[in-house]
Amino acid sequence: MNPKSSQETISKIENELLNIDGVICRHIENSDLLGRGAVSQDILSQLRNFVEHTMLRIYADSANIKFDYEYITEGIKFVKSQGKLKFLRKFHEYLQIVASHYTLDSENSERVMLKYYEYPLKIKNFMFKKYSLNILENLNKFPLDIDKNTQEYYEKIAEKVDTDSNNSTNNDRYYVHKIKPFFVNQRIYYEVTFIPVKGSANKSDRTIAFTTLDLSKNYAVKLWTYESDIQILGKTMPILIIKKWEVSIRACEVENFAKIFGVILKQANNLGEYLGLMDFLTQTGFNLVELLDFDDRRYQEIRAKILLRYNAKISPIFDIFDKCREIIKDNKNGCNVLQYLLYHLNNK
Image 1: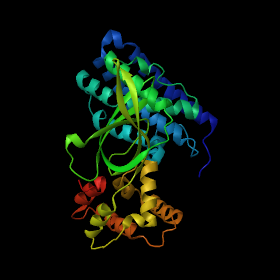
Image 2: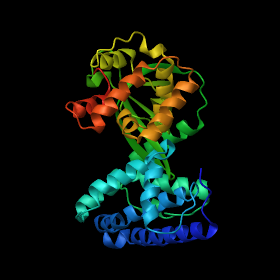
Image 3: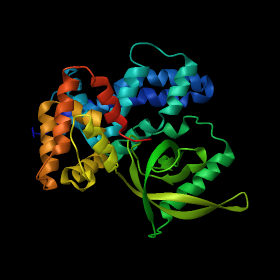
């Protein structure tokens, strides 16, 4: 790894980040005067620059760089290769789609800010914890306009999620149908709707639980849950809390995918590489399309690390992935179908 950047460079990056932050915070202060739509429009015009300088600050800890625009591209690439920074990767990708090449009107800007509010909040919390940088200090003043009863409901749930210490959990495999963030005291919580992997996908089979854990929804997951309750409007309401989770693609889903390449796998979930792959997807938040899209060096590095860590003597799953990479990289017939299957890989 390259040496860390000089303190002078880091100070310049942080100062520029704080300058952009000052503009965003000033816009938030004008929410009451200008309205949420106009303020959202003003904030969005600054957010991509803000996110990219955040990425540059993180990159400066891993490479000896200068405070120069050319290093922003390198910083973006570096951050997008780090699984623990997936929130920055996702937010940057969203901003590239919605706010890069044209200016949204106030109504659409408002929708975007409400939809992606969790990402500025994640950046705020991360940068304070990592670098003691106070940014987006008045983000709580951005008007989310949640009615009083709903906010009280969320506050009671948040209290249970934070304080319950129930060790009696059930675990089973599910598909995540929907993840909805909500916010209490500038912390992020999630309302997760999921269905059993077996059986129908009717609304009556859906279950809702709450957590602070940032789950993936591309593949089947194992959820460790326990029951609790809250007092709301004078009544006791049962709730379900997710204590732990992991990606857990079903063996039949891996085996069915392998058949596309004429490979017969049996009990794929007992393979060392399968266990390592599930751990990688859980810890990093990457999906299989993103894994296969890495450059050759990074892909081979991840492949080797998983096989070594889990003492995998054979690698039929990664051998199939190697073939997928060749088809996708060369844009051969079927590449789009493969990417679609790899993105979800479920039998529902």
